[in-house]
Image (tube, rainbow, N blue to C red):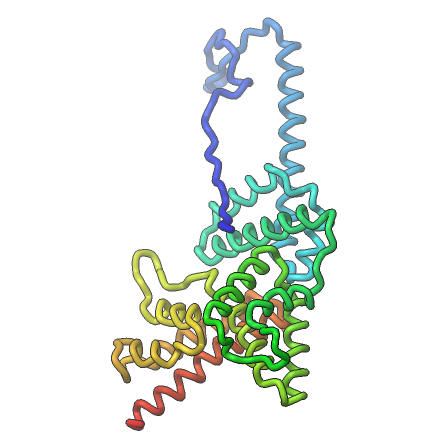
Length: 321
């Protein structure tokens, strides 16, 4: 589901208070003044008071909306869900217009992207809340089962990779849909990690372990692909663009992409350039996610996985093996 923000541009018009008739011009102590036609002055005074009260109410409303936007922007995943539920009636047209205005007036591209991401998340959560009001919200276990359903065969033994090549596509489609619905929260990530830890401890379900790892990889790729750092003005940063290509690609294609992209193979990007942008991406993840959260850990581990693969491949290529 594509999500966007509509930006509204105001049109200029004469303010009601400007609709007076100039009656006489003169100077008092060298200062110019314009006197008014005082016919109907009482009515004009009433109008001025009414406009003043409306302006004060509008200002107070804007302050309230700004306070809510600030809380939502600074909230972690769990707090954001709670804030949306508690303030669901506040998400009216005025709220979205104000959020769009703040997005448009951001001084940096990073801040602008933060607000755009916040708007997309809020729209998703509000939409899910509306649709689930009269239904039972699925548990994290139910969501995980729905994502894995396309790759789990009827047989008791779990095969990986799945025998049906279309199963992975269906699994990825289901995960994307659940992410848009706001289902892939900390509770979901906790459930996946718990299942993965159990599968590792059991040691007799390598297919399930690989399957759960794939879920986390798809999640990380999906989240990290939402924001691009490949452009700086009109300049394309090739190393950033290359990293984003790796992030979006399946883990099974990383070796081929690294060989074709790095200058120790067939490409023109040096390992040092790639390592630098990977380090920057990890720093950005640490800044933009809640410390100690499953999301932070999964996203950083995914990028570190790309780095580890690149280091191994560079060493192998330089050694001629």
